[in-house]
Length: 96
Length: 162
Image (cartoon, rainbow over all chains, first blue to last red; front, side):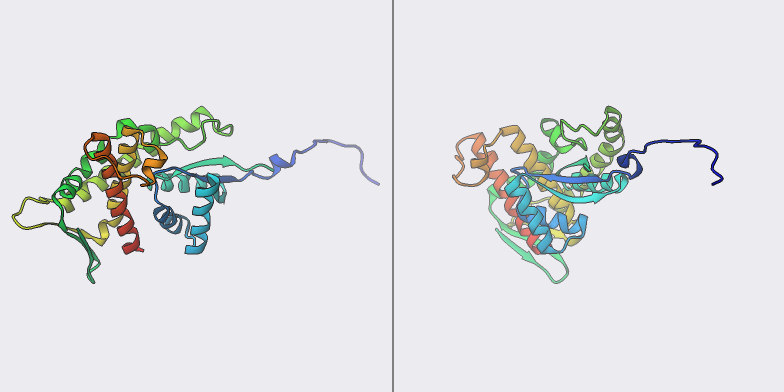
């Protein structure tokens, strides 16, 4: 073999190699109406009505629902739109 | 009060009881009292224990996003004020036309007002659920009635716009 020696030997960390996605979480609050939250999910996230209703019920019963996962810039844009509709929404970096 | 939907995509509130005329007329003003509900209306993008966001992220959000939201909310209040016009000023029963183009502004302003009033009065979840009739002899009860009335309007508009 022609190899003469190792020039570099770096152990990579998988979580650095793949950009960790961001989650958009919507939280329950006692003010927003269920029908309104469903409508906002349809408009902002493009969910069909049954999926929007499912996420709204998850927010209502479990206190939160993960409604979108992906790259950070888009996640921030979604959270900004949800804040514009006055829903309680936050970003979280997804765990591996 | 009657709620009508026209083929022209406009909505009309008519035959409005004088008490509800007052509540409607007060809507933009109630919605503008943001100070008591500022943390709720202008949220940060992470939980309080948001371990993944830095102080810089939050400062950026406050610097760039919050002013845009302020403009959006103020614009919505202006549109609703325009629709309300001189509500109740005429001799006949009060009425108000809402163009379909302004539906989102109405939904937004109704939500702003409800959030503000709830923060100002610290209503319990039981009170907000409508399980009890509000005591209209108190300011607290009148404010609760206002929250319920605005919620009712929101329901009508969501259903009609859907």
